[in-house]
Length: 100
Image (cartoon, rainbow, N blue to C red; front, top):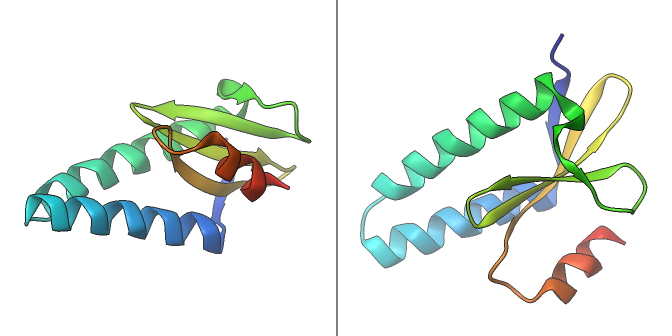
């Protein structure tokens, strides 16, 4: 049975920033809509199979990979908390700071 998915404020903020970047770069939201669909599909798979992501070594935090993005999440008994969506092309030190 799939677990309920809860999005952190940081995750919502990061996804919006990613979409805004692509909308401005492409002068269209077409790519953002496709990317959103892929994120939704990946999160759905994670909710059904929470251990699919690679353990990070920090608490129960796992990484799901979606192209150049990481879906950073933590599994709880009845839910999955999406901590952030991370663009792998950024400085990894920033990600570490978000996970503390």
